[in-house]
Amino acid sequence: MPIIIEKQYSNQAHVAVWHITESHDELQAMLPSAILTDAELADIRHAQKQIEFFCSRLTIKYLVDKLGIGYLGIKKDEYGKPYLVGSNWHFSLTHTAEYIAVVMHPSRPLGVDMEQPSEKLLRIAHKFLSETERNDADSDSDKLCIYWSAKEALYKLYGKRKIIFIDNLLICPFRKNQQVINGRLRINEIDEQYTLIVERIAQYYLVTVC
Image 1: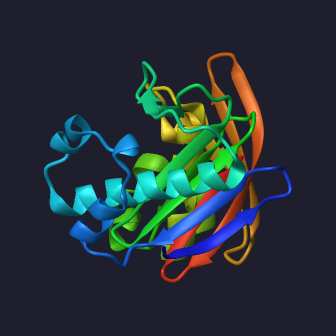
Image 2: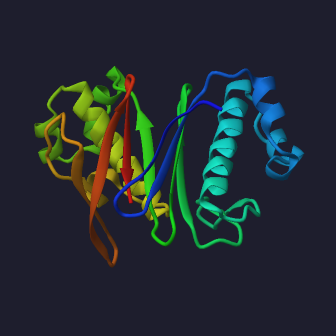
């Protein structure tokens, strides 16, 4: 099982990262029937997306077993946010073509995102960054990636729709090698400050808010 990172943060959040090296059939064979239904698989037709789905379920099951949490399945709430059935533990997951990351906390909502720097983020920066954030990131693809993943992580923590990245999700300027950055979720009656953890994994940035 290629779990390459497993750790506990100082605030009791647990994170596990899986490096995808197995084939589609190998992964499917590793999944107990209790955590994969034919109906779930039928909804995912692309082979790569099935691989990511298999790995996400396996990573969740790995953490659940390590933490001694009874696994009764995963469902989604009215906004599409997944949750563990019959458990107070919160979790968030992110996937790329190469990695799956899952973070869990016993009582607090959280969010995680993983992305690699790309030219696309430079082209769409005006759509998700405030003027202050754009000035700080400039054309640095690494910083743009961190900004994007930080806002995605905050969005997942919030877990509801109709959010505007420029107005509702704010990230304080930071140094590129900074491992802890600060963010703010400001929407409707909510105005909260959050700490986000930034880690580099190969060519990707993993950002967790918990």
